[in-house]
Structure formats: structure tokens, C-alpha cells
Figure 1 (cartoon, rainbow, N blue to C red):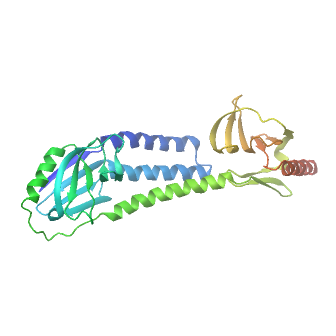
Figure 2 (cartoon, helix red, strand yellow):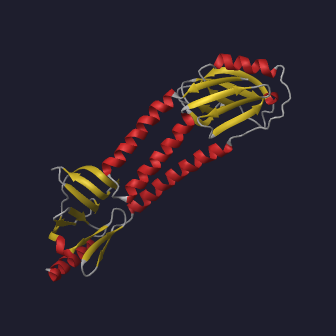
Figure 3 (spheres, rainbow, N blue to C red):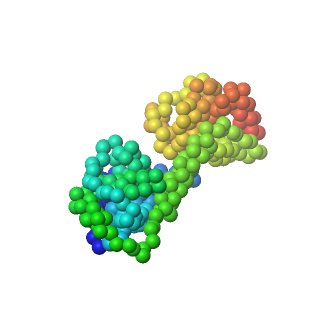
Length: 297
């Protein structure tokens, strides 16, 4: 049995810094906002799974099978040598890159570099060609060809490793699904509720503020210049969460830009800008706030 292992240098160099940055950003923005923690947690989980898959690729050639194992074994596949027609060294294009995906030459399984072996099968209708990345393509191709010229019948069963591929796809699908849900949730209209003692802003980054804590409430026709988002949601003209203005002051925004007026609410702790996509509703919000502040004070 011969074993050939390639380290996924490229994959590690790309994903490890991304993982470290994601973890660092999670601690920088903090754990106060659930939505932020969820986003970063799924990104970190996806990067960890990818690292476990792409940090190395091992090719094993025994008397009956050609097997490759990616990373810790979440993705692995084994082929009977008797089913293989040929194995040749090839070089992938830069566009094909690394990863697990379909190319014009068949499925590609690669963790680093452009070199690979291409395996073709006798039953081409049932099995398409595959390319397996390796830093020793000539040696491996020669070893496989030597085996398939005098292959022995084996008692081993074929392992598809589909559970690893399914796990990877499932993790990616969950991450994409969460991001879609976040976008949909963030794009919804901000709603304000009024109790006897507090104003409640519902939805993403929502919170409550007591009327007794409000030291100023006013309306503006022009929104102050916004410098950057620190921990918030931004999609088109919708801004929600924590932002920094051009004067470096920190504020919370629940606004739809370009739809004046805007309500300015100041407390001892924070400054809030709020409006609705409907100017009439914004004015209704402002009236409710002013009336309840007057009653409270």
C-alpha cells in the first residue's frame, strides 16, 4: 500500500487568517447583540469545518482500491482499481482553484496548488472523470497505472464518503440560510411601541428606553453625516444598530435614509435616530413620544 499526503497550504493560508479575524471581531464587537453573535458564530463554525476538510489531502493506493481522504476524513471516496480505465497527471487552470466543485473535466477535489491526477473510468456513463489534487501527480499516476494493468479482485467495499460532503453542504446551507434570514429581518420596517413608562423599538437591534431617561426629543429634516457602521445592519437605505457619525459620536440608528423627517432621541447613555418609511407614521411616533415625556415629567 502506498500513501501520498499533500498539505493544504493554500487553504490554510486563506482560511486560518479569516478564522482568526472572525474570532477577534466577535470579541471586539462584544456579545451584547444576539444577531451579531449568531452571524460570527456561524462564520467561525463554517471556517472551522472548511479547515478540517481542506488542511490536507491523502491519496492511498492498495491492491484493490484508489482512495482519497480530505482532512480528518469528513470527505473521502474510494474507487475499485478494476473500474479505472486510466490515470494521468494534469494541471488545473487558475480559474478552477481549490475546493470541491464541478469543472469542465469533471469533479475536482483539491486543497492546494494546480497539480492533480485525472482518473477516468471504464463505465463513463455511470462515472464521470474526477481530478484529485496532489503535489506528486506523475508518481501517483504511474503507480495507479501499474496497478490497473494487473489488478486483483478485492473484498473491500467502496466508501463514498457522502456523509462528509453532505455535512459540508449542510453547514454551508445553514450559514447561507441564516444570512438570508438576517437580511430579510433587517429589511423589515422598524416598529415603535409605547407603554406607560417606556418606548420600545422592536426588531433587529431593538431595545427599550424609559421616558424618564429621555433628555431631548426633536425632529430633523436632514440626517447627520454617517461615518461608519460599528455593529449594525446596512442594506441600501436601511440602517439599524450601532453607527458612528462624522464627528466620531456613537449613535443608534433605526432609519430609512431619504425619508424625512427623522426623530432624534437623546438620553444620558445614547443618542437614537428613528423614523418610518411613512413620514406620517414618523410624525405619529414623535407625537406619542412628546406626549408621554410630558406626562412622565
